[in-house]
Amino acid sequence: MGTITTPHRAQTRWHRPLLANAVFMFTVMLVSAVGLLVDDRQLVGEPVWLKPLKFGFAMGVHALVLAWLLGTLSRGRRTGWWLGTVFAVAGVLDVGVVAYAAANGTFSHFNENTDSVARTVQTVFSFGIMPLLLTTFFVAILLLIQRVGDRALTRALRVGLGLALAGMVVALWLSTSSGETPRVVTDANGHQVSMIGAHGIGDPDGNGMPVTHWSTTGGDLRVPHFVGMHAIQGLLLLTAVLGIASNRRAWLRDERVRADIVGAAAFGCTGVFAVVSWQAQRGQSVMHPDLVTTAALAGVVALTLAATATVVVRARRRSRPGTGQRPREDVAAPAAR
Image (cartoon, rainbow, N blue to C red):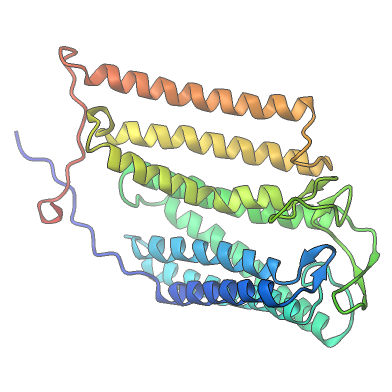
């Protein structure tokens, strides 16, 4: 029998504009951390520097994932490079203006004032938000037409980017469909600010949880946005753990088994995202789910665990001596060994 080999993959080239974007984001995070220590100003009970810190961390991690991912593409590499560059520039603009608003002690999101700071923020958001959404959409399409790595990794990336896109769309939809009644709040400088739109649903400004400041008195669009944006990191971590475990567990050496486990986890992430989106839209706090929401979440968890257990039991059964079957090991190209 001939030896089965796979084509040698080109060396991954990290996307440099996205790496620069990540450096910027983590710099914003560090500056904001210092701001939390030396600046006691607050906006609606939240330190002014907390939002840019969270944005810097979240966008920095996401930029690193995209920088690596776009360097692994085998098709559409030039298109991917341009998409990543647009994302990097738009991300710097958006997070930069969040930090700019914080430095000025005022609101970045939903601020309808006409002063120079508010107008600057509104202008940057009008140019910066849509490119983030569109580039994520087209990168997801690039992933659908090719495989990146083995089946488990490809599945994790496809579902993860799909959920990231959904997280952006849901946040945009909920922010424009809820809390539309104009209201006036006071910023950190004691100035009155006209607000239209909100993170909170049912209670526009809400009373937040520690650190995240998600509303405990109503729905909050930031919950599904968080789940959607960060599912990809969890799925990639699971893929890496399964790959390491396959060195010690024969039944995990079949890439189809690892892909099916990742698929079960992806189903769970998608289910949780759908439930918390529905919960937020109904104006219900993530901290106080009703019976229907609890049942829906329990159903997602039960189905995810059942699917995972089924994959594991079948894989272990096939790998036992005397069954006449061996786990299919991944075969790498000689040059990659």
